[in-house]
Length: 143
Ligand SMILES: CCCCCCCCCCCCCC(=O)SCCNC(=O)CCNC(=O)[C@H](O)C(C)(C)COP(=O)(O)OP(=O)(O)OC[C@H]1O[C@@H](n2cnc3c(N)ncnc32)[C@H](O)[C@@H]1OP(=O)(O)O
Image (cartoon, rainbow, N blue to C red; front, side):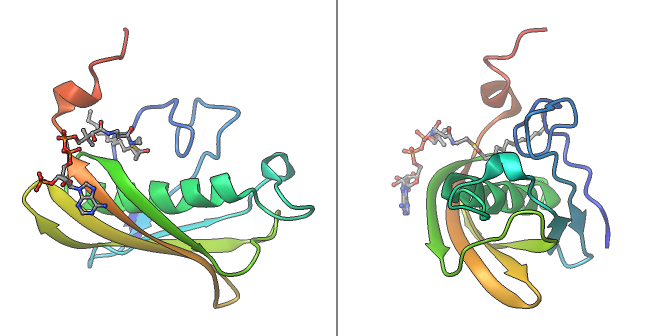
């Protein structure tokens, strides 16, 4: 596994190092394109007492899948996201998020992701991403 160089914005809520309120996730990638992130989710992202908020769980899955696209050199935005909340995800425990790119059909990219704790799958997701141009992605940025 090696660190994934993904070029995402520094203020990204999921992975931006400059976003002090965000999740600041770090991702690894295998030679086969499997994305892995091991992280502890801080208490400020609480939903049910002691557990991660469901919207944050969706973010973790979405973020990991978007990195699976980046590992394929694809710049894409989420068009459709499905989440299976199988078990609550505890705060402050080292969870493992994995994701992979499954297939492409033209601009459509299909990915899947899971969140595990001690080998048990707590949540899983699937998403459709649509490839966009760099110009489209950056059209609202200011320098
Ligand atoms: C600068 C370089 C550095 C790189 C940094 C990288 C960072 C990357 C950032 C990562 C951010 C992280 C991730 C985030 O958080 S991204 C943030 C959350 N996502 C968004 O905000 C995206 C909002 N949506 C849009 O802007 C548009 O919809 C986009 C641009 C994505 C596509 O609009 P466009 O008008 O082009 O396309 P379309 O909407 O007609 O749809 C396209 C196709 O999809 C088909 N379809 C739809 N639904 C389904 C379905 N359920 N099952 C199967 N198919 C479905 C549909 O029929 C159509 O098919 P076809 O008719 O064409 O065959």
